[in-house]
Length: 143
Image (cartoon, rainbow, N blue to C red; front, side, top):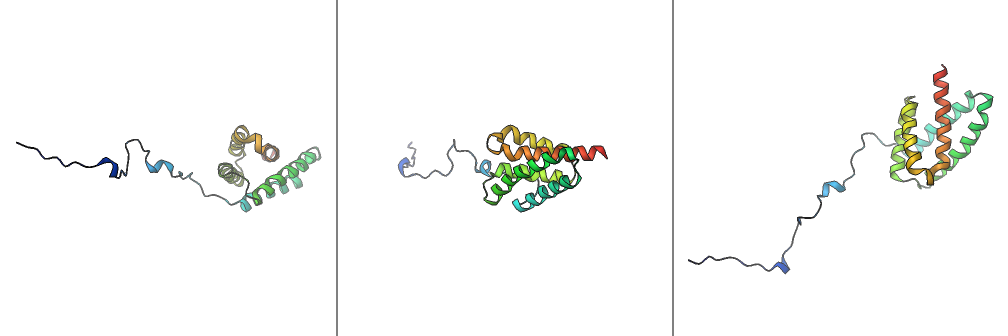
């Protein structure tokens, strides 16, 4: 009794999925669950907050608002030149969504996350946003 086996040459074989290859679906970016704002919309939201703080802040807060305005100018410049990374831009979008809803607690949570992860490169304008968020939250709580 002879068993015939078909021999193949391994050198010419094409392997489509090796046992150690990761599945391709892990390389697809997950949907983060919200619509992304573009950099222009982020700028409009932050400028609106800045304008509200300018008009409604007490005399003691005017210097802080002026300093924040200078710091945000750095952010706006970087947004125009598309120098902000996708991860930071995504978190800025989410933070702006919270700001539009007057949910400053969650906006500050995202801000603190940005401060801990990206302060080294983005610290100057992050401090400006922090001050504005604090002023808005203070104004909202005083009502």
